[in-house]
Image (cartoon, rainbow, N blue to C red):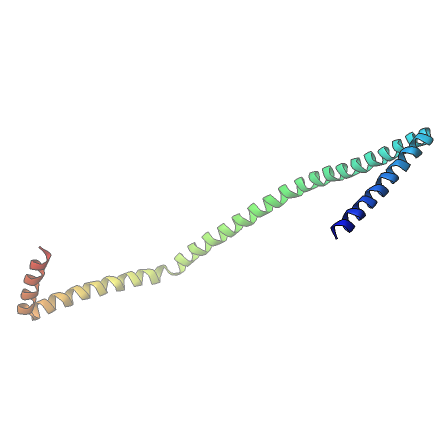
Length: 141
């Protein structure tokens, strides 16, 4: 396969070289026409390149304007979401103010009742509480 592949590559490179030689000979034989043709081809290439570059510049300008408008829209939307969140929290505080006050008073009463029960249990079980306190003081030292 290597020999066949090398033969194929050699044959193809000979064809490419022959085509290039034909073009060079045609350029020499038709010098003025060839110069005009090359000039026209370069002109078309330049016009195409300028059209592409001009379209790119125009797209850039257009997108720059729309990008700044889109950026401002995104900032405005973020600000609206932040304000909506703040307003929601404020309204929740206002609506739950009475509930929050009642909850706080209930918790304070619960803590007070627990303290009272603890003190009552200590009085009720004086001997056991005295032994427990002595044991606790010995363990903590």
